[in-house]
Length: 368
Ligand SMILES: *Cc1c(COP(=O)(O)O)cnc(C)c1O
Image (cartoon, rainbow, N blue to C red; front, side, top):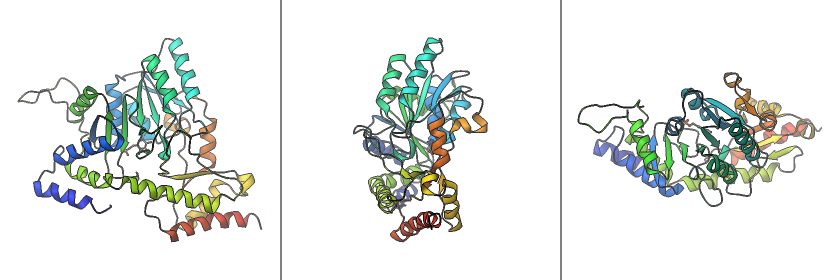
């Protein structure tokens, strides 16, 4: 927490407006629109809920196909299954680690030619960096496919000057505890389409029809964010830019202190925008470095420092093994060699020195 949150939460208690909906939720949505540059926003209980509603409102149902990045967190994919639809995984490109636009275009064209166009695509913006949206959006527009952007990890990033999450039909953000800003748990659905958000708002509050009694013509969900958590979100939003700067400073420090080591390669920052470095991630070429990713991770663990492998691609997950994947080598290699370094906005210089010394000592042990 940054300090501002308590005031907003106090306002909630003073007004005794605790339940979902209320002035803090309205203000959080409006302020979020201003920060990311979008017309409409809907505060929800999680990013996953936002993805689920996006799919429902894009008409995704039983046996439809939904294209999705394979290198991501499972929450990008689970809502496809909730709808009884089938994920089609697409491999990463090296430039950004995000969905390969060429593979995406080829896949859409093949499926259209086969008479089964995908219903939607969930494009993930990984680790604080936007995917290359334009070529993907172009294909979506040509074939009438809904582009849903999973920007859960990319709040504060830019793509050609705009915020990822705001270029497609809908975008989602997450305020889970590990994200760049947090409400302890929560999410946001954004769109320039007012009707889309109005309908999502209705579904998120149990799909009540306008009537004095409880009237229902659609299946609803209980997905709304509480007024208390929206108060926290408003405080957090004020420190977003500071957080991005802190994360980027961590990254710069790691680069400065580790770049001379052979076989270490940081996740590239693609030319189209700003990477927030929500997480600093790198790959280790074991032949050149003299030790592999697991050696380094275990050396961290021995020092009680948490560092995790890059996401295990969805096409390699037992639960999704039966689904189609286009390519897969690039993301599999990133998983095999990739490591996420400690990246918190509150890391101290002492922490950073300690972290760097662990990696350097693994290198030194293998080069003595
Ligand atoms: C965190 C995350 C989500 C889910 O957000 P929740 O708010 O935790 O439901 C979805 N996609 C990606 C890529 C994420 O990292």
